[in-house]
Image (cartoon, rainbow, N blue to C red; front, side, top):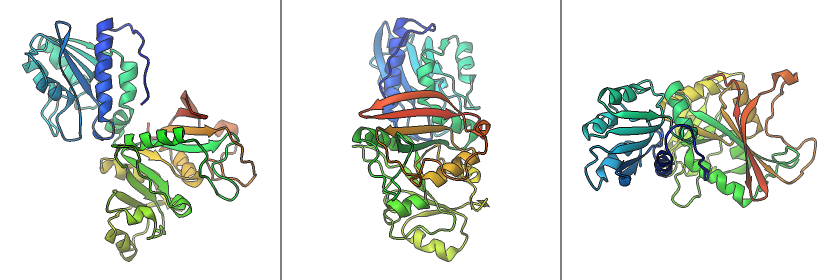
Length: 379
């Protein structure tokens, strides 16, 4: 979520853009704390003066609109509210925000994104218009929409939005021929990875990565939040001594396995792990089914930091939505040095996994290329 340069758009005035940008910046303060709810910011303006503002600070707590009203320095009657996402119109953990907007006498509402939630999906807009409120929708939506990419996917499909991340050399290697991989990228790139670990609800790796690297899979940002750790382990062979297992009582850790032997489960359960039994498919856990089970557990977004084997399986299963490729200006060489995606691969170029909407960012001496996967089977 780096800085964004805002440029004028057809919808709204310059003042609308400025106040929506303020609401956008407020919304980002909720990163890492509101999942699986959306990031939302709200600003209330009266006579060209901001009289109240707020954002959704934590899951289960007050929404952005409520916090904005609670901070008002004077009556919001007749004011304009700027909100990055359409106010909710249904009862969840909190009452409908749209009712409060109407009750407080707001005369104009400027919205960034329409909420795709079937429980909302334009209903709030219509309800406010019926109450005589002027509503403008889509102001800076090209910035507000990506803010809640994960939420939009999750609310529609009920499965996590999966981001596959890997670091490689410029010749496409994720490790040397001896399996050494620390460090391919620079400190700048590694810091960005920890920002994403704070952003997404969970991080997922395969048992091979745990055995080879013994990672902690935590977030090392000051004030950051550790993601839920998901270990894909078909036969349940993760070492009990692994750091992710030994710290499972401190950081939520899920072992996704096809092993149904309760006696094998118990040592992990004793250390605080959660066991999620998943059906087997083609010799490994069924990743499509796993996504459904994780969605049921309120996991809305996953940073996939697996090795080449898990990456191949995830792409084949069609559960990957976005790919982050960190490229370092180094060459490892070696015919046997691993590449990001293992498996048999495809037989013909026409069968390639296609990517779209490429974005490139320079991080020190490294490059980050972010791309969306075309024709994901869940979409």
